Image 1 (cartoon, rainbow, N blue to C red):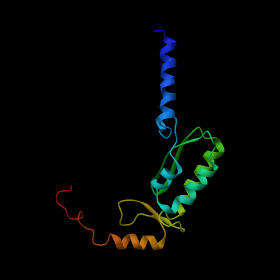
Image 2 (cartoon, rainbow, N blue to C red):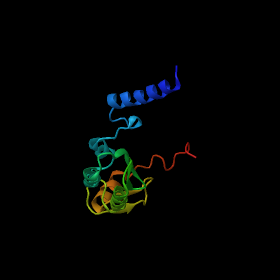
Image 3 (cartoon, rainbow, N blue to C red):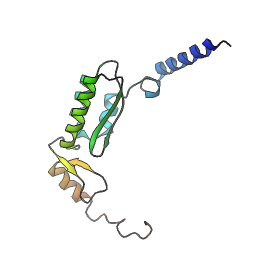
Image 4 (cartoon, rainbow, N blue to C red):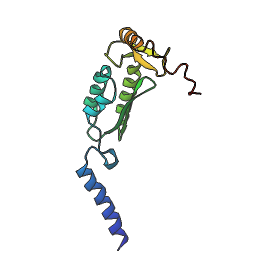
Length: 142
């Protein structure tokens, strides 16, 4: 078998898998807007919609997640202006409640997870976990 055949066959296989599975990022696909909206809280939906509306056609979104209480929006083949826009919205997500979309701030007191919440959602979150001390005095956890 000639060496060019293996190269041609390998590229054809990747192209065929991209046709079969267009949303699979390993084959050059991109996650959908709905998947991105489901990955984080509903309060950040306006930010994600703005980023998807401004997304260039050839840019693929790989991951949308929350990390250290701010939005993370990872893509490939993005131009410099789109990278700046992503950085702007990632910083802005640190001031927007991830549950309701109101102005919020980083909350980490008495939590294992840092969250960006408004005062109302913070109050509800604290009320929800009052009395949840199963792991505080558990002797099995060292």
